[in-house]
Length: 440
Ligand code: ADP
Ligand code: ASP
Ligand code: MG
Image (cartoon, rainbow, N blue to C red; front, side):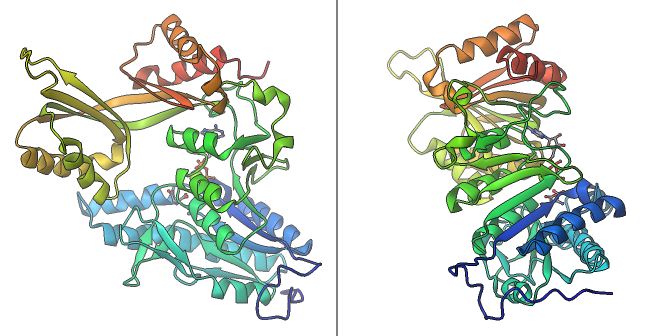
């Protein structure tokens, strides 16, 4: 029997200015959180409890368990380099299964719910299949479902382009769907439910003594996500910062406050006095790294544009770029030749290779080489800007562990070392301990 909750408002828009303002909460449940009927029910209970507390609730779900990987496997059985439009058509089905099952689960708890695909709830994207970006959210349908007292259950990771074709946002993209809906609906909070208690000082599956954080700044979380902390999709944190969406990461099967991702200036209470002296807040490991080395390039104005403009137009994100000049023996023209090394996601290598070939042809000189089997360990913290010796601490820890460093890059709030894959986990643990981040 479906209990019909009274509509939250009888008006045609959500009146967010009245004194009895109804809170809007977005709850996103990741792949492992919806992998079985039992886990899905625990998630549904959280949503129904929030709804019964008088909130408007919108759910975003990912594909169940390993579904997305399995779908990619199916594609590789039929085509070596599958067409990206067709890949999106295929991958989007994973989330479509989850929304229908989740809506049924919520209904079975006596609460009205309705499943909506990205298209049905107006998520518009650009045209870059498999790595699309959200351009707008046309939230009319969502509002009307909320006004009828239902819990909309939205498929994460997907949208539609101008032609009405299904697009996907890149791996882990459901977090970004959730934050985009939170921004469009001006939600009070965006809750990201996953399979750990929140954001830790390091991936707790690799570093057993990692400590749960009460809060982390958007900047630190963005840096950690871009350096491999896959707990949050990088673009979701970026969007959260830009749109001022408070994001809370929690465990989907347990109780707990989780971790708030926010602006430290606005939530000073969460960043105790201890935090101010913290040089490093998290360490991260980026696996699946590809490194491209371009050698013997003629250094001239526009050289870098020839390479990176092309890569950017394909929508591929480059990680770190290092350029250095190469001795040519000619004293009159120092720095005539240079090498450029950059890293990127291993999965982007097949797409970047023909682009590099084309760029080298246009430049008229140079050769390229690709390396795999590398990882990157990074220490991240806004506090390192004002504290000396952070890099030295990291290098000492790696030296003591007998780890060879193959590249170093730094920004104001991170230090990264590229290492052999086989050293990755051990290096993460020693760097984590060197900064005293663990539980004692
Ligand atoms: P979901 O399927 O819910 O989106 P993900 O697998 O994408 O979940 O992200 C959760 C995982 O992120 C955790 O299981 C954990 O292994 C990993 N992780 C990496 N770095 C961290 C970190 N600093 N804090 C917490 N989890 C982390
Ligand atoms: N199902 C997609 C993936 O596995 C999106 C997500 O989980 O966020 O990458
Ligand atoms: Mg994820």
